[in-house]
Length: 481
Ligand code: TAP
Image (cartoon, rainbow, N blue to C red; front, side):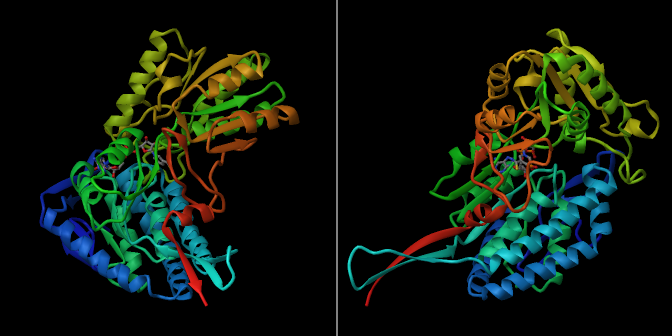
């Protein structure tokens, strides 16, 4: 399955054997090595940037309609190969196969969305202050994009940047996470099959601090599109040696507010889904829940039951498991640390708290979906991003108190509300200081709407027209005629 891409870089339209040191890629559910990546060397980075610059010259001149056709073809090829690509993703990331397949199909959807948007890249003629002049505002593709992505959504987080670049007329060099490089290389196979010209899309692999940093540092890269932790995002912003466009999609610490008017069954279902899906390794995962005091104990009892009912499995053997292995030892360690901190500070464990019983699962990074109650704001589970299957719950007495505590965080990515009272709904949607607010549902991001964070959660947007605009420069042309 991986023989065509293991150890390879994708540069100038070809899979080439990387010259650098090899790094093992491991199936986190089994602890087995599934392949290697090559650490891209400085010479190979130079070649990738040259290839992308040449690719940009070609692609930026391709008519929008033909770029759109390529995106639709890419979407079709990805959808047709979804089962194989999902196996690659599950093998390197640990999420159950059905969930991985869903992600691949959403990537295909993104290709079609941006295929449609590619033909709607319009300029403007704006009013002028003198006769005889015309002012055109034209959109031009930025150039070469360096895309640096994390391991939690190995297809979509590469795909959003790739599709927007292709639609805009940019070229791209992708540096996927070290843990999940093969999904990105499998996408590159489809790019080649779709007939997208050589150099327009390139994939380089290796350590972020070296290979990712080389893209940040390179004067031939015009924009960095980064998704990852706030710490690395801030480092990139500070270390960038030249003026460069940046979009940063960073961490989250997302609250759910359940008011006294909420449908408690729906709120519990939403909370269980958004706290534990992908083992909580989601930037928009619900990390902390504030529940109106009259509903508090009933909510806890039902959430504990829902968490305990989730099935855990090796994602390849058990495609329909609710949750799989975590992606590596690091997020598991952090989850345990946040749980221990909460219990030490007086939280009450109401579900989970340990790994599932041995057997085949003992070789992976498994942990049971965990709920802690009576949490206070000073606990790490409430104040930091856990990025694991752990959620903290606390009661509140007034809506003002709920808003204050929900906003009491340096992050501003997504927030959630369950309520039926209209006044409560309007107040919370206005007062929650987040880029996304989902009310009576937990799907904060859709392709049509801008998706981005505030405060330490980032700069810029993905999805929607706003996401596409991140890949353009505006040019004002003032004509006298
Ligand atoms: P990071 O450790 O920040 O890594 C993200 C990417 O940056 C990886 O490809 C990494 O490479 C690379 N990198 C590391 N150091 C770098 C440097 N000095 N220069 C350039 N690139 C560098 O994040 P992660 O642990 O993979 O992902 C989890 C984080 O991502 C969470 O905080 C989560 O909230 C956030 N996230 C945010 C969003 C959105 S949309 N806001 C979506 C998903 C995830 P290596 O893999 O080699 O380290």
